[in-house]
Image (cartoon, rainbow, N blue to C red; front, top):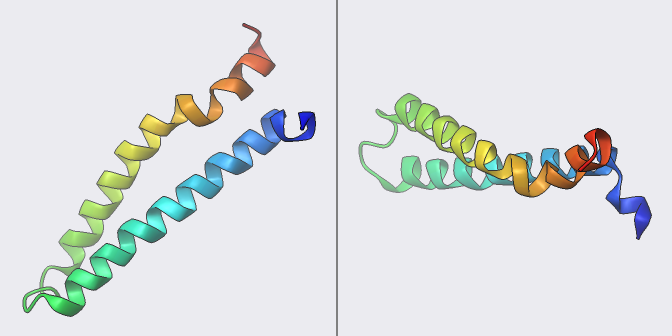
Amino acid sequence: MATYKTPIVALLEYGLVAAILFHALNGLRVIAVDFWAKGARYQKQMLWTVVAIWVVLMLGAIYPVLGHAAREVFGS
């Protein structure tokens, strides 16, 4: 299991979390565009809202996901 505790794998894991989270949030946006009568009109605003929420959540995920990698590289 030590293979999966390297900083490179932690960085790849963070990228995977980023991709999955954006995919999920964008899917909710697409559902809103499809099922809301005014969805197409507000598509651009919803995209930027999704991006803003994604950035906030990814900033919050930095320590839990990359904390071990930072301690490994820079010491305790």
